[in-house]
Length: 110
Length: 113
Image (cartoon, rainbow over all chains, first blue to last red):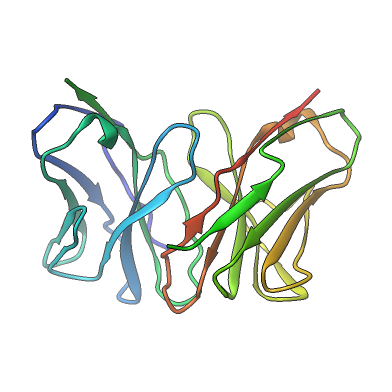
């Protein structure tokens, strides 16, 4: 399964747009890209998934490069509640197991 | 949204004792998972199950057993708890067809003394 690389930490101010990058250079054609976030003392929460191009939902958008080796999670208008660790995970679709790396710790300042 | 509950929410156990962590989901999901998280690290998969009465080893199964008596319930058993098993344990479920979309419980904080 593909391994992912993310920046360990990021900082932003409330109201800013935040873009979290993830490199997955060995992604297989059968693998999908998932993003989760985890706030302290809670379990991870699914944010968004994608295979290629651009995906958007009510929470975030996900851009995937044409070669699928890089993805970027975009969070519009972050608030203090968006402070969390964001995990990029690459895995098979059906019956997937998740492998969590270190994630990106997002700090949001007022 | 999927509902996954865990019990107990926290537990203190003695070294060498038996610990059972329970997980219950109410969404008819076929897949259930147990992960552990050590402070400052990501989650690691211990055991998982895709059907009742069957369990599979994850990435770090040593020292743990799992039991899936029904579709709704999935237990993690530490027969001989050790200090190194102090961690937060998360249960998750998914419908399988949703791939990597898993729904996590609130976690159980286990302290082994």
